[in-house]
Image (cartoon, rainbow, N blue to C red; front, side, top):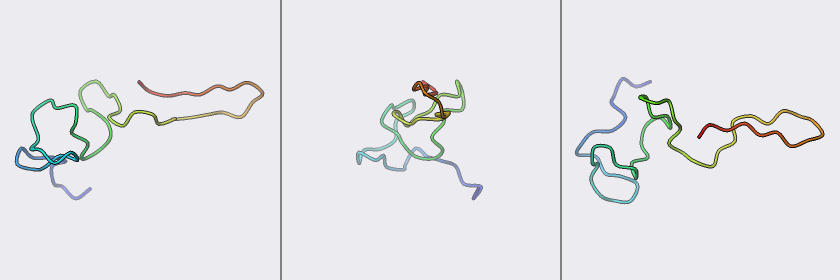
Length: 60
């Protein structure tokens, strides 16, 4: 960790606009929202154990 904040109000988002508090389009810093513990980056598989049936664990 660098000790710097993940995002500041004057930083830019991935879409080019300024960061707005609570904006769903902000994808900077760690990919986990610290309040509910939810992942910011959708579509990632956390764990898939080996076995005959597909069993995929993801956080929503």
